[in-house]
Image 1 (cartoon, rainbow, N blue to C red):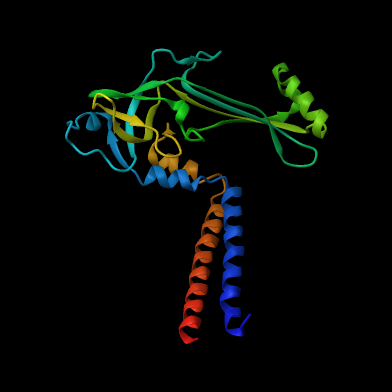
Image 2: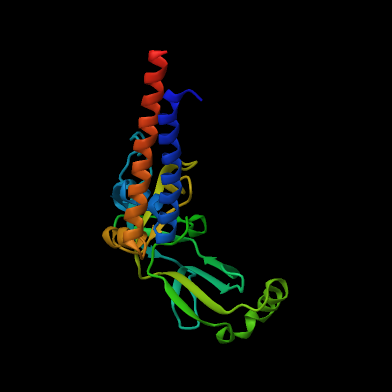
Length: 253
């Protein structure tokens, strides 16, 4: 390699290392920056504002954040008499060699109407992106505390990798009494009526106000998130510097 290319090569290598470090820190922080950007960057509209669009009116070109309440004729009814339109539960166990292994991934949903006083639009939460933006219920404890329905899964895991040490469960629920923000694409159906469709990656469903949703999506370790973001930004600077150095070398050659 020509000596004059050592500098851009070093800058590019530094950029790669910083990018990898930054992405690892963001992931470890528990943050969901992609979903946060999609939700925060969208225009917010009420259901009634969408229904006011006349047949010849242009539709929003980008996904919008639609505000409304829930109406569901046949909700999920839990043993505690909660009435839900979405119930997500993930149960994992800690393995002897390190890491967590899933033993249950439960997803139950019901289609519902997102409504306000001017009308309603149909939404199918089975097409929602994950995670649902709600305050999760988190449990952790010994494997013995799990109920008997998990015995077959625990036996299979134990036979494959040894007895797990601990267990944890994360449950996310959307109740019919929640007020929702739904990131959706606005379309016209076969009868030219305004309707909602999942954008690329699925609906983003939040039972929290936007500010609270942003805090939740920022993860439980905001310092790691900030450090990861700074590392990614610095890696971009190094890549740009490497590119400029290569361009300068080519111009001088």
